[in-house]
Each structure stands twice: as structure tokens, then as C-alpha cells.
Image 1 (tube, rainbow, N blue to C red):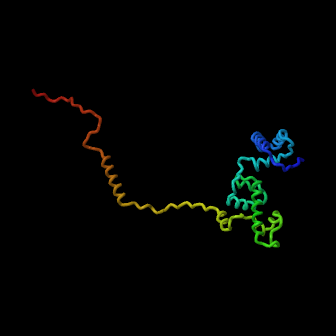
Image 2: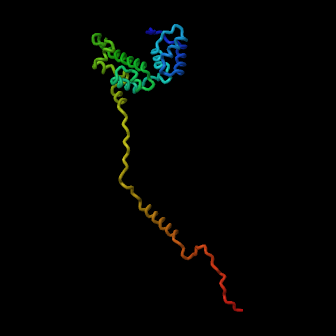
Image 3: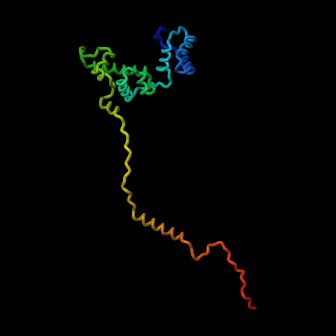
Length: 218
């Protein structure tokens, strides 16, 4: 079994890992790790460490922006549903890696513990380990909440947006002004007058024969 190390990754290792991932993709970590071992001195990292380094640090799609209130509320909501399945929760937080989600979750829990202990005497302070605390519903509900958002603000954010209902069309017929009706009738009558045939004008194409013989009187 490959021994895990806690030494930080070097810049050269990161650059080589990026090149190998772009060449072989995200499914051949054993091959990537083997090539890394040939090019890096005293290499003793595992394929899983290569994968984690890419997913949690080097992937260009990772979001490293400050967490929003909405993201934190969604994180707690999904933690209630999936527990510590950070990779599953990351599917709902686009661009956040499982490792960054885990670290942010526990950082908020520690802030809430400090906030809780601030105004309490030693005997009433929380001293248990976080994993044990979260198994108890009382402390879970107390600690798994945003550190900065007030309860009223949290309810407002977590409330889903209501969809606008389509406006119903009025069944009442539109009122037509009498003036419009009178104008339309006059227009219709004028068109009918124009379309009437002129019975006093011969519109045929036949020619009149003027060659008939008239009596000649000298």
C-alpha cells in the first residue's frame, strides 16, 4: 500500500498533473500517477491523491468566490438530507468541490460553537467533539445554521419564489363605440357603390362594324 504523505504539492507537480489530465482525462488516475512517479523525484503519492488534487484545487471549473447566504442555506438543507456525503452535496452547489464544502461546513460549526460559548460559564460550554455533537438533535439544530444570518432573514431566503399566475383573459366582450360602427357602415356602403357595374358604358372588346351600305342619292 502506498504511504500517504502530507507534503504540499509543488508548482511543477501541479503543472504536470494538469498536462496529464488534459491528455488522459478524468478516469485514468493510475496511469497518471505512474507517469507522475517517473518525472517527479521521491514521488510516493497515490492515484486517489492525484484525483483529489485535481478535483479540489486544480479543476478550472471550481468556484473560489465568497460563499453567499443562499449557498450556505442550501448546504445545510442538503446536509440534513445526505449527511456527510460531500460529493453528493456538491452536485447542488455548482462549482464547489466536495472538499471545500466540507471545510466550509465545519468552519461555520466552529464559529457557532464559539458564539454559543462566549457568554456561558465553563460548565455550560460545549466541549464535545463536533462529530459527536452533530449526532444529537438538540445540538445539530443549534449548530447547523448560518453563523451570520438572523432567523427571520434565513426564512426569507429559504422561502421559494412564487411563480406568477397567468392572467385570465376577460370573458366580457369589448365595448365598441357607436362612432366606430357608423364609420364602418359608411365605408362598406361606399365600397359597394364603387363595385356596381356601369350599365351605360359598353365595356366589351368587340368592334362596331361601320361598313354597311347607305342609300346613295346624287
